[in-house]
Image: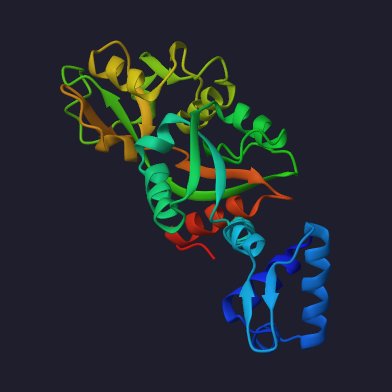
Length: 296
C-alpha cells in the first residue's frame, strides 16, 4: 500500500463517484479504478459496494476510512514539519555566550527577535569561555557563540561576525581615590589590583586584551568566574575592573563607573558560527541577528 492508494481511496470516499474523484485527482477514471482494485486486493476485500447507480462504502471501507484519514493527516504533518525545518522554523539551536554578551543586551535582543520569528524552535543556552565556544562549534556541539572579539586568529572554518564596539570604563568603589574623577588615565591604574573575568581558566586572551587597552600588563590580578563577581568585587573595593561601557547599565549599590580616558582599543563583540554546512535554523538566526544590527 502506497500513500497514493490512500489518497485515491479518500477521494472516492469523499465524492462517492469514481468519475468525479478521478477529475479531482487529475487522473483518468480507468486508472483510478485499477488503483482502487489493487488496494482492495492487498487488503483482502472490497472497500466500496458498487452498483450501476451508486457507490457506497462497504463495511470494510467504513472501518478503513478513519485509519486512512489518520495516515494522510500524519503524512501532511510530516511534510509540513519538513518544510518548516527547511525554512529554519522548527528544530533546536544551541547558543553559547560569555557574561558580557548577556549584560550588554546583545544576546537578549537577538533571542527576542528570533523567538518572535520562530516560536517553535527550542533554544539551549550555555555560558562558556570564548575558546570553548569555538571548539564546540568546530565539533558541531554548539551552533552559535557570543564572544568578545580580541582580533585573534581563528580557524578558517569559524565565521566571526562583528556585532558592535563600545568604549571602556573603570568600575570601582565610590570611596576609591579616583572615583570622583571625570575620567581616568590608564597610567593612574598601574598600582591597582585588577579584577579579571576568567570563566574556567581560559583567560589568556582577555588578560592580553586588558594589557593592550592599558598599554601595560597589570601586575596585581584577581581572576573570577563571572561578570557579576567582577562588578561585586569592584564595588566592594577589592579591586578595580576595566569593562565595556554597556556594563554601566548594571546598577549595583555602591558602584561607580568612570570613563577610561586613553584606552587604546574599544570593546568589540562578535557572533561565532560554522562557516560551512550550517542548518537552516542557524542561517535563520544569523540573518535575524544581522537584520537587528543593520548588517547586510
